[in-house]
Every structure is written in structure tokens, then in C-alpha cells.
Image (cartoon, rainbow, N blue to C red; front, side, top):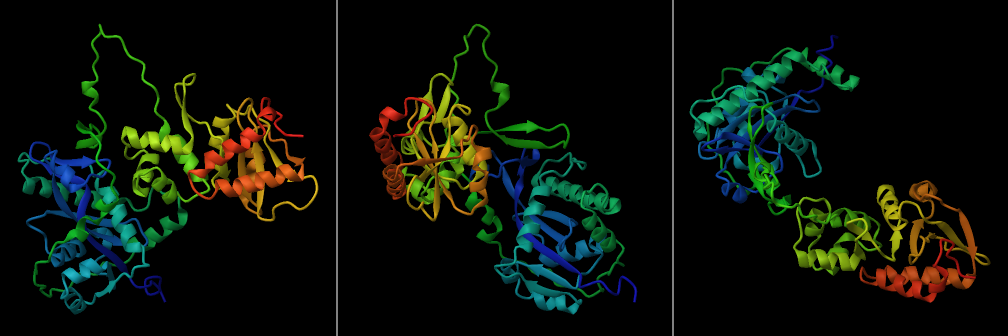
Length: 461
């Protein structure tokens, strides 16, 4: 039996969506965006949405894309048959065409029509992430199509036709090159075997070009986008496309030579908050609520995808104990805190800030007599002339074993009196109750031992 006979069923993923990174502009033609933008926000820049259709070979980076206007939508059957007839990398008809439930619902007769030409339509269930992954990959790739077909007429229809030709040329070029340039040898071998398959041309059975109903599902990717930021148009000499980039237009940053530059503080609140939230004892949702913002606003802010207004930033800084350091010209975690070691990068970054780059003698506190807490280990960060911070590290976790490497000048285990140890455990328990209790409880703890943290060797008798 030859290799071709041993091949499993051929499977393609088919998807339709509003293009996430491509729009049309009456003066610029096709415009690409690097950071996704909501359709209503795109309208303010004169951008009109276009539709993306695509077929991807299951499990392989081989895809075929085409586009249409929103008003003159291409029929699903026309898109499929065109691809199967002309896209070399698809190798013709598959055995299985997998789609999401929206595509299946918008054209209920598609399953029967495809069965007539030997293709089984299957709907991906909610747990199947392969079809959404193929769509995401196609969306990402569409924004980087090289502009080879530049229509003289920049109208919507002419621009979309040129974009289709760019996409088809890109497919043909990649299919002819095969898997060259990949670092994954197993994937290269799978691509080679696929491209060696004989092409299955569709039979000459006519399929009616039925219209299909558009709906909000076409732009479901909008739901996760943050509020829009300022943007500007920019010509990319490499791709040849016009881009709508996020930020202030650099061409407007020309300063008058007679003006004196004014120093501006570096607002790194988002970066500091991101690390603190990652180590905060309470869930991020509770932290957001305590700062009177939504979880999504907090996530957008800490990932620097959106800003917060001045009042919200101040509330978040107050909650998380973030203060402005005039010497450094930036914000820093002032504490004192009870933190939980979850992410190595976050706990290391906070330690570096609190200790001023390692000016501390961190150590694990254990009772001189009696049993230690069976669930948690307690690490003291006793930076010079700074109130102490306590890090709770779960026993048996990898990150706990890494703390000596993450905290510079780590001094190991330090026995303390049972009274102090009980105070540490109790303080941590109270600080973990609510997001607001954290800094408050640790501040009270620090006051009880204030005379002991005047130097790096903070430890009561």
C-alpha cells in the first residue's frame, strides 16, 4: 500500500469574518491596522469594513484567503469552489469541511449541497479550538499581505479586487516554495507529504449561489477590544500599504527651537500595578472592584492597551500602595505588603523595586519552637530603612524553591520567637481578607516593630 493510500481524511477549515486588520479608505484604498479597532471607531477615520473568507488545511500553515465588500457578499459556495479549483496548496476537495456553528446556521442547505460533491460538512463543537485558531492565524496573516496589485481606481470594489489578487498570489508563492524556512522538521515533513497528494478537482455539479445572512458573529472579535486610542495614517515602504497606527502622529512632534523642553515624569503605574496584581492575595476581579473599575479596565490598563483617567489611576495607586519617587522620576511600589509568590518575573520585579536593587537581607521566618504553618512559608523582605514586606510562598511549589534565586542577598532560614511567628501568620491572614486590608494590616504590623526596621537586619528580639 502506498503512502497516499495510508493518508487520513483530508480536512479543511472554512471561516468567514469581518476582516480584523484590513479596511477600505476612499483616498488610501486598502488600509491595514496594527492594533485592532472597533468598527464604529474605524468609521471616524473614514474606514469601511470588508469581509474575509478563508480555507486552512487542518493542522498545517497552508491557507487560501479571499475578500468581498459587505454589501456585495460573496456566496459561500462560490468562495469554496473557487478555492478548491484554483488554490494549489489546498489539493482540491477535502473529505471533511469543518466550520463554526454560525457558518452552518447562516446557510442550512450547505451540508446537503457539499454532500453531493463528496464533502462532509462538520460543525466544530464549543471545545474544538482548531477552527477559531485557523481564523485567528488567517486574520493575522491578512494584515501583512504585500501590495502587488495597486488599482488606479481606489474605489471599494476595485480595492477589494486588488486585495484578492494579492492574497491569491501570496498563496501560490507559498505553495510553490513548500515548507522551506521552518524550524520544525516534523511540520516540514507533514507539509511535504500534504503537497505530494494528488489534487481532487471538484466535479462539474452546479451549486446554486445562495445568499447568506450576515450577523454580529462576523465581528465577534470586537468584544475584547479596549477603548480606542489616538491613531494616524502611515505609509509603509516595505509592504507598500497605508497603515493606521496607534499613537500620536510623529510628524506633528516638531518643536520650536526657541521653546524650552519641559521634563515630564515617567508614568510607569501600569507596569508596577501589573506586577503587584499578579502577587496580590486577592483575585484581580476583587482588586478592580476595590479600585472602582472593571476587571477588563484593569487588564487593559496593566497590559498598556488602554489608559485610565486621572481619578481611577490615583485610586489604583492608593489601593496598591504605589507612590511617586522624585529621585527616580517614576512610580514605585512603596508598600508595605503581604504578597503571594505566584509568578517569578513579577515577584522578582517587585523585590528589586522594594529593595532598591537588592539592598535587603530577605529570609524565611520559622518558629524557634513549635510547628511551622503546614501550607505556607513566610519570607521577610527587610529593605534598608523601609517597612517590612512579607511574601507568602506555597509549600511544595516550584516558585517557592526558586525564591533564593529571585531575591538578591537571600539569607536563608531565620528562627524567630513563637510570638513573632504567630503575629506574622495572623497579619498575613488579616491582610488577605480584602484588597483594602493589605497595606493597612502590614502598616500596623510595621508600627508594632518600628524600632527594629531602621537597618537591614530587621528582626525583633
